[in-house]
Image 1 (cartoon, rainbow, N blue to C red):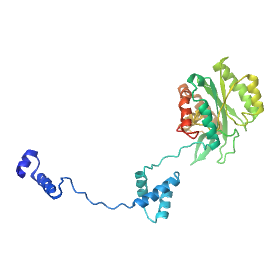
Image 2: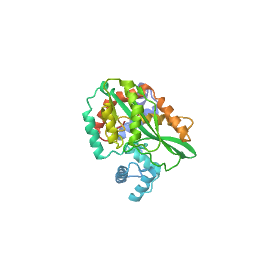
Image 3: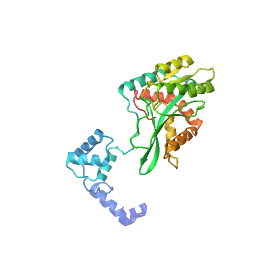
Image 4: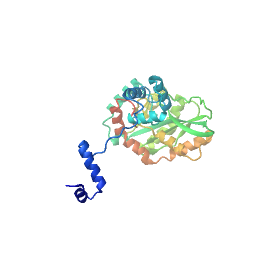
Length: 315
């Protein structure tokens, strides 16, 4: 069959048909020849060096990793090249997750606690009154004032604010059935102050939401919460406790919701009075579906802690 015949059958230009025939006769294939490209800056050995640097310190910056690589390998490369190699290695820049630094001992306690409560039903979780203690600080950055919330996990003392502006501490509680108003804490929390909050805020809330029915009050192992004075109050009032492991923010963290609502406010609080008012408003504005979802997801959160062997989870 001639080139003209091929052209008629294939309905392609004669030049295209001729090129394909020539390629087939020369190489046994009609595929285009591979073109030589500029050699890569980094070879396999250099990539292994870069991979080792990435794994040694995941939180160092791109510039720091580039400098360390150049120092180790003697190869001068741009940050753009290093970034491209990171992508090739499957490493992508992300904001560091803020998680509690869970100790091995606390991880063990978390795991034991979650295993003991892994079969709790939603109805059982609904009987718990959850408490929340948070500190919010007013501090200056680039001339703007911010409110920043931080949970208390190991103690209940309001520390000195290094950056100025002052801070407030608030105490609140919630259950499946509703929120109670926040209680501002003036000064350092002590056992007497804590028992006063239990008397004036926690107890009325327990009666309001649970009446004579069964209920549990969430309590961690903070020294103020477990003091003799506090224990006497619980015994006297007949309030049963749900003991809570240390460093457990991924199981219940409604205070984070208040912080998120503060951060999206158009006018940032610039004084303690304004911050207190903003925190109160942010807490009251939390919809019921939000804290009910927290309670509803507790079985999944408990299972996640078990899966992580007591370590941090995605929650």
